[in-house]
Amino acid sequence: MESYKPNDFWETSHSTVASSGVDRGIGVRHVGGGQSNLEAEALYRLRRLNVPPTPKIFELGSGGGYWVNFFRRLEPKLFVGSDLSKTAVQRLSELYPDYEFVTMTPPEEAWSRIQGRGPYDLTLAIDVLYHVTDDKIWEYSLNQLCTNTAVPGLLLIADYFYEQPVDQPSKIHIKHRKMQSYLDVLDKHDFKVEAIQPIFYFLNRIVDGPWRDHSKLMSPILRFLTARSIGLEFLRSLDAVLTAYSRPMNPRSKTRFLLARRTADG
Ligand SMILES: C[S@@+](CC[C@H](N)C(=O)[O-])C[C@H]1O[C@@H](n2cnc3c(N)ncnc32)[C@H](O)[C@@H]1O
Image (cartoon, rainbow, N blue to C red):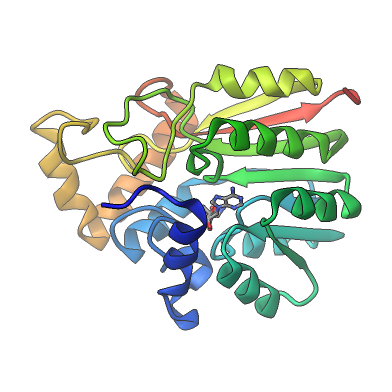
């Protein structure tokens, strides 16, 4: 297996799927998550959130456009999306001609273009920052997200927020970091955390191999259920109730939304 090269990896993930199969990212593996389109759809439906209407929005890593489509309902004054993959940017630009999409290479040029349209009432990085395995680029990207958020705007991140060993770090397209690493950067920009919401309990967890999250008994049951639409719907509903009401936290629900408000210009 070759080492992880983010540009190539993400461009291949997007460009090997026909435009007709993208379906807001659900049809692009690695983007929506899950082993099937059905599972990706169930995972997306759990990433629910509430935001104020008509914000000026910037999204890092728009992928297949699930959140572009979601926020469209709120009629944003301005929506600037982005991705590392040229194919993703090209497709989204065609689909949403009234919005802007930026290819994130070279990064300095891309961020300066994004900054030129900001600051934003809402900045988003949903399932993106754990794909930035290089620590310097990760910190740079998070700092940029912070500086491009208006005072008193919101930053919304969905991530794993859980440090976990990775057996082949040079080859794998993920790096999970603890929440404190994120908070340390946010603190420099005077952000105050407003909400932390667990997203999944049974779904989107490793069900196979030595790193699996579940017991030997539970894993095959989950594999059986996630492979069937009725089973997936059952688990999705269960996760929706569990994450909303019992709010399971570390390490059972590693995936969370983190919503923070910028309180001052740092
Ligand atoms: C798991 S997908 C999530 C896409 C979208 N946010 C969603 O939730 O549907 C991650 C996306 O981030 C993009 N990506 C990876 N590294 C990136 C980076 N450094 N800057 C911008 N986008 C990146 C990938 O091309 C991919 O489309």
